[in-house]
Amino acid sequence: MLVLSRKENERIQIGDEIVLTITAIKGNRVSVGIEAPYDVAIRRGELHARAASTHDPGRSKSRQRQVA
Image (cartoon, rainbow, N blue to C red; front, side, top):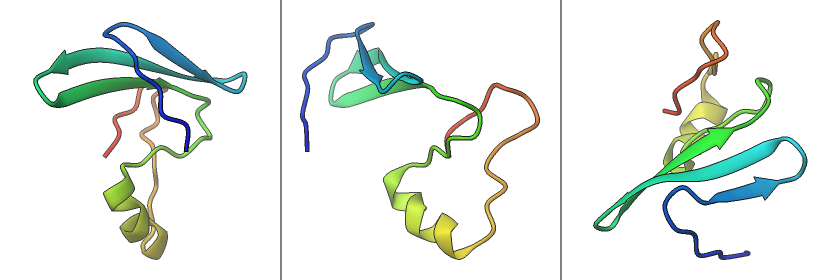
């Protein structure tokens, strides 16, 4: 696992199409913005197993999406 330190508003590029942006840091909580192609599934780790065992439509019809 690669571990990187980032400050607020700094970015991490993954491949050519995925960008993570640290949008806020408050205490021990970090908010991360994710820019990725529409067809890339993005889920919180604790929901991954549940989503794999049930039908997960994954996205609304808009290009904006919220991660569960």
